Image (cartoon, rainbow, N blue to C red):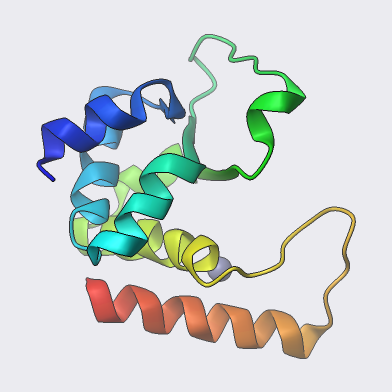
Length: 125
Ligand SMILES: [Zn+2]
């Protein structure tokens, strides 16, 4: 898929300004097709810009969907750090890591998941 096709396909699931959207789709395009397809269809990305307009969606939108929030301060970092962080967060989704307010993880579980997400990011960077 091209960057433009990914951006169109994701449409309203990319809630960020144009430059942030471009980083996200450039990270997705590095992934193998089956992982990319899962992320494109199941993932929402939000930049946490305090100046952005509010964004509302109802619970039904979220069934089998995943949310990734990317802080504005990230985009002041190097391109390498930005891509690494986006791929790391995608890794948590692609690897089906548990992260829920209803589920408390042990420290060793968290460490294992963080290591796996780091591996994922390094693999596709
Ligand atoms: Zn992580």
